[in-house]
Length: 534
Image (cartoon, rainbow, N blue to C red; front, side, top):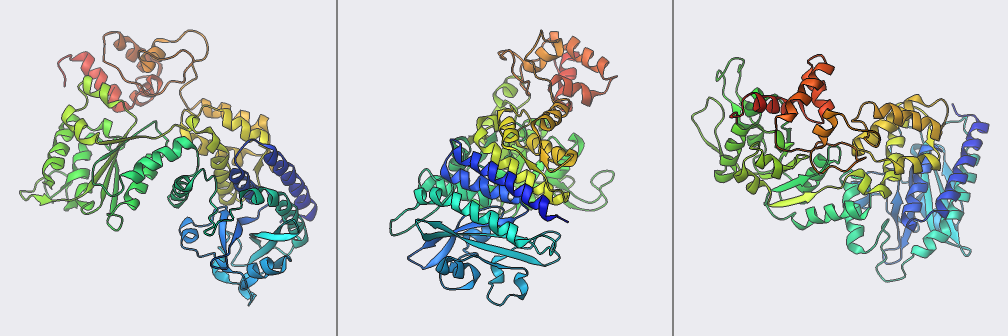
């Protein structure tokens, strides 16, 4: 239950943050999107949207929104004729309109409302005109839970003020050409299309680094050439692979994923190629492999750099002749699929170390696409933060918001774990928040705790032997260690033994200390103990 006084205090805090946003050096579209995020995360006003007029079709179209299903937006589900429905009334009359329960209001077009978790199907709706120079130039609409203890008048007052602050920004963005198009963060038509493509695939952001990767994927959408996604862990490789599949001519066929590092070596061959019943101990029934499941569609092999050498040879044969032979079968099956692979491993160095086949590398590296680390697209951090904040506030039924100072603090962080680490920090902050507002001090505590679970920042002092081992040659002093790779040498053996001693022989924890996967640690041990080991 939200008391009226609490609600008004939250609204006052929202207006202060909106004023700060309007003074920030960022694009006008980004300012509007951030305002809509604030309405959700701070004001419990969900699915906010700004509709602008298309005078050719005489309809109001969604130009900016928070968390509406992208596919519905692209299909025009929320489009409203000038003279129809509650939103049409607001546009044509310049008056505020609201309903406590959209399902019981005959004038409301219920198809443009979205269910709110915990609302028990009672959805309130508020729509206010955006006025500039005495005339409506758009409509701001939002949803809320139909809570009789929460005054609609307070929310209406807040939205009136917000709309008056948005009005001048929208006026600057208006396009008076025949075919009006409003897209957030639009630098040009292509950039706007790529932003919409990101939203449709659940990828949040509009930075140049992000859109450059999206553009590369879009350019090869009609090709069957293999794509190799490169980048650090946590940069969203599976989401980009899914985007590439959904943009391709194979979009109606299966999209099959497998993480080569997450499956034990003994089981990986069966997962990829399948097996016949009775082909080995435990094979109680026939199993179709992932490659065969992807027939006609797309196969995504994540962490391909961790695939064992013997399986690399078998995968190469499949790519050459498009045939597979399940374990224990004497029949060959033809498969047709597009291959997308991903890795955080430096495959050039892996080839030099003998851990990756050169001929397979050439097969995979047809269209390499580098995905930016989060610190390379810092301007996307506020939007990502607000997205995760809204999600976890609803999941845990908490009313939590971040101050602008907190968002700036998060934006300055390096994020070695990328988007996945940011998501963890936001979730932890929501759960540990003492009140509604998370302060800079509280987020610093969360960041400090998070740092204990990641590889330490080496901005101080001299490095230990394990640290030099993890960083490899050419590392810059003060850089956060990531998984670099180099040739195995005798000096590494003492570092590995020291790490194992520190972890009481636990190879997984020792590998983490060294910045390696457990499989890579085992490989180095074998290589050092038997120099002729391949």
